[in-house]
Length: 315
Image 1 (tube, rainbow, N blue to C red):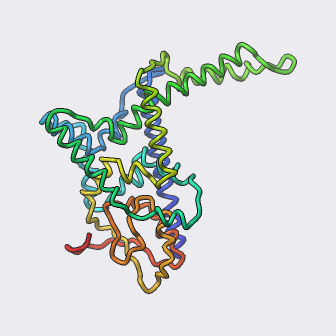
Image 2 (tube, rainbow, N blue to C red; image 1 turned 135 degrees about the vertical axis):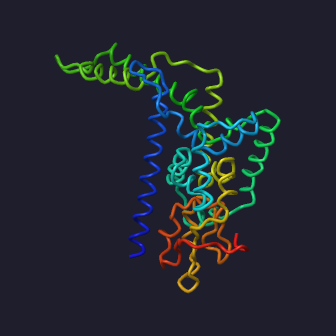
């Protein structure tokens, strides 16, 4: 019964992640200038949910931006329930999670690199650096904030390259116009291209000098997931560091039953954050994305999550 419930939670998390990722892409396209463009609404919703943006703007300008009040909701829920935002909402976290799931390797190798390392403290140092720079009026958060990094990479590198490829492909089809007899490919390709031009492609796609560099950084960040699970989220993300600090003592806590645990450490093989779910007393809530993978992996059902008031001495 517990395994069935866990499976449903994992699928619910995946569905939620996918929904927010699609939502992010939709907002991105809404901000792109194409013939039916009606930019407006909440295209900045994800930035308004971002407490790192709120904090760095407050420190840099000494003004409180009312539109970022939603970020306080993110912080409030994180205080109570932990770093859920990284595991269930963040679109860049979802991309990293997806590419992490594609990596191969033997179980022994995954167990060897699945645990916590001291290098995961790097994101906290980066967070301090960004906050200090904001106090001095030099706001650098846009370079490492996950929403800003993803949006900038899409806008300056990924989307322009995709648009150029689409235009080149349909241009070639129009020029060659292959087919059989009177049935020509353009009778299908041109309506499709018109649909893409109207709803997807920009009217005039600008090109940026830094696009190649940003595209390279994006693919490096994504590629590092094959080296360590969710590398960006573990070692770099300053928003994750902020949420980790705020949610270091949540009400939702991992409980390990020592009588059922056989020390197989399978829970560690698919742990996305290196949160040490297998350790008798070393679970690290500040590194946990609450993805429920560890509970789903446990063959003896020794791991579960419960609502409880944490003790003062607990991590």
